[in-house]
Length: 285
Image 1 (cartoon, rainbow, N blue to C red):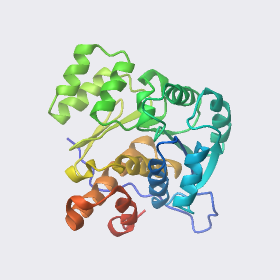
Image 2 (tube, helix red, strand yellow):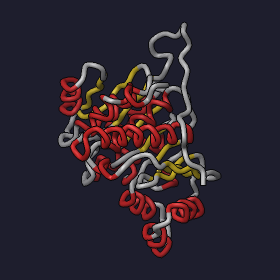
Image 3 (cartoon, rainbow, N blue to C red):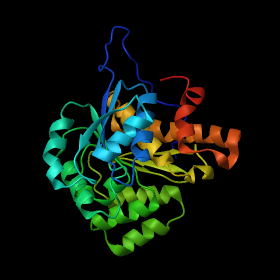
Image 4 (tube, rainbow, N blue to C red):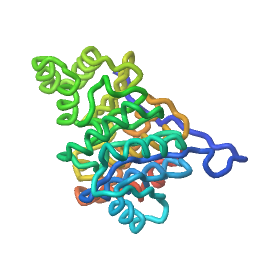
């Protein structure tokens, strides 16, 4: 059983210019969800990536502009993303090193989920698929991605992937994280993807490797910590780390800061504290 004990560093050349150390794009949001995008975007910036742009429905994008001057937004008409936005999003994505999709799309909006599925199937960039993006796809729809489910999202993802109901039940009910991770690896045709299963002990699963992470604690059930994790993964992907290293960094760092917050604040900390205190906990990039 291999645990993460340190992060994989990224180095910036002393002669580098703006944009040479990662251009990250986040696709998500809706009339009901704005903060999720800001959390992910600011987390990506904390990793050292140069520029984060958020593509969102216009009202959500304007709200993000008010939340932070550090985030660039691209505004799209409507309250939710729909199929009519796919072409423009794919065109926009060509200018970026890595993409995060799914946060705040709207879990019950079928058009937004259909939009996400179409983008994920067609986009040609390293991806992080989180939140509502996971609900939209099967394993056959995605390639070259970090997929970040908690247990309920994993169950839906397995159903979407046409896995036998009895096997899904066995995976979901398995208490031993080692056995659970191995079942997932054996059951899913993971291909060139990494599953970052969030839990008491995180499991980072590729087609031929499983690594575990034990940082983090029960106080991190507060809303937004998953968005921070997804943003951290995006930031490291944009700076050139491979899927496994970016996923391992994200799990370890997110949990490490969460442990710091619990020690300092107990159960009163919030997700934005993870971003604010990143530099206090993670000394090296």
